[in-house]
Length: 353
Image 1 (cartoon, rainbow, N blue to C red):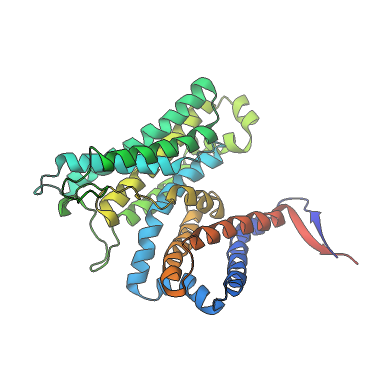
Image 2 (cartoon, rainbow, N blue to C red):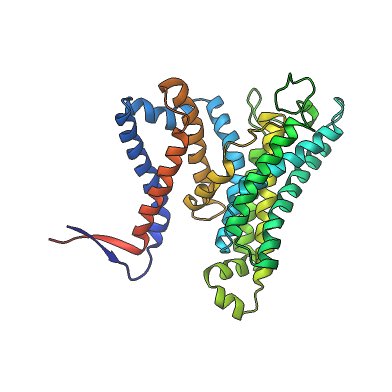
């Protein structure tokens, strides 16, 4: 029979091969799911993994989903590698969208805009996310509050705050009662990268964040202290590395990136503030970070896979009649498949009669 035997040392190959196996296992489970629902499994997998990238327009739509997922997951990778579990990136993303949207609505008179105002709104979004994450860091630092619970609960506060704003102070008086703000003028929208598509410079900002995160981890002494604090907290304390500084650094960086992602969503494909600013990017980015091995470059691959799930889930609803929960199902399957495959990092499979 098959048995698991502990490895003498963790397998470096399996550490990077495990996410690939998890994606393949997700495809297998997805095939079984389509068969159980009476759908054509080939057509189902094609909708998820082929249809979104069969033409330039499809690639651009995938890129729109990659931008917020990648930007948020880079910040979460920093937190998790420092053993700081920020689960509230969704709330920080929403606050970033709120502060950026408020900045645009304040200055937007229908004639202004331009690069400076776009940069100002993005900076306001990043500041909003940092402030929301700073609440978690302050409660953790001052009162030793559990950052998992605090950051998660603040997500619902942020969602209710956004709902109140678009139903009240920020609601467009010409929206016929719909909860939404005024549409932003063209001068306040993020410029498109490809003509004729919705793909905006938010993707370039996300890629830049990934590169900066990699340089921070691999080339800076501060990044080295962060990695040591995550791997060996006692050794970091003995060496005199400040755990408080690490907490504030990673929380503010993660919140700032999440806030900028929210600003890019509001000023990019949406073009206004609505209650559905995010379909759950902040939570999905947690899976993205772990599938990408908490590496700022590795999350590029996992962000792409997760973006396919979002686009494929939308297409499967319209073409195959699948329920709206299919995207979350695939995300959950990927997470459990990754946890299962990670067992092979420290164990190997043996056949014994």
